[in-house]
Length: 320
Ligand code: SAM
Ligand code: DTB
Ligand code: SF4
Image 1 (tube, rainbow, N blue to C red):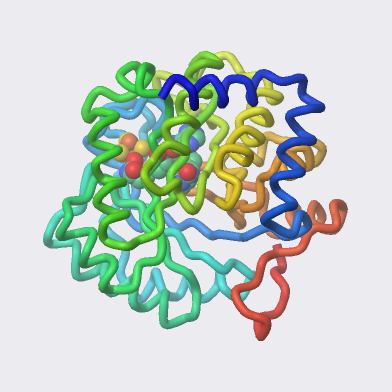
Image 2 (image 1 turned 90 degrees about the vertical axis):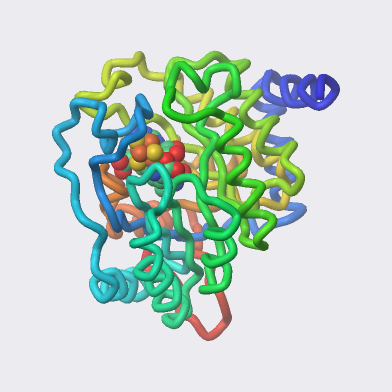
């Protein structure tokens, strides 16, 4: 799609003030600029993953010394979800360090979805690659979103992951869409990719048959023992440009300022929100890495006059 890709590049490379103004204008046409959606993550199965993603602490092939856990018990997951709801999260995202789910784990995974749904929260899972039947069973249990990131450009993908292809990722996304589940798909910046790679990644996301309803933009969190542990830090303005371009290319999607907030100042986060980010992960851990806790986010929201999105009017405001 050369026409489209030129458009994405033109957007991304504008003077920053033009880019921010355009992104904020698009944002205001579709969203309240003072409202941020709050999601909470839980790692339901940590470490020991057979995939070789160069950024990830959970790959058994990386020397990150993270012990592999078993799949969490359903009741423990539901207890955690209840706590997250009390803290104001409206979406509960459960992640497993799998290449793809095994049949023996499906009953527990489906029970987690039903249980979290019954609490009145939106459900999200990220379990690796899915076949069509698995996608349908997740949908049947009430799954609202499936997170499956493309992570980088098609060109750079094989530099980061060799145990699966970019096309594998796209195929799972198509199966998730075909099952009628909302897609959460984004990527990581700061992995040594070029500006062109970041533009191309956004172009692929925006060019999906239906653009993802949720677009997480992660800033690489360098994890000890992984091949990317010492990658030079990306200029944070490139993260802002990535978010702003995502907002303009996917005007009605939630764009999530995802991993990396614990390394960002309030001013940097404010710029990301101005660029059109309107979703975050709350709580003091992501999957294995740190995140600003509740108190810090409460202060951030107060400083910026932001409010947490609520699912219905009967819910009280988010403590985030
Ligand atoms: N195993 C599943 C998969 O890869 O699809 C789900 C879990 S995986 C940890 C989910 C996403 O977390 C990855 O696609 C990547 O975008 C993000 N992620 C993992 N490690 C990260 C890191 N160190 N910094 C930033 N984002 C990271
Ligand atoms: C996403 O895009 N970011 C989340 C979620 N989807 C699963 C994960 C971030 C992981 C950060 C590194 C860690 O906690 O290990
Ligand atoms: Fe496994 Fe997902 Fe980490 Fe890759 S990103 S190593 S698939 S947990």
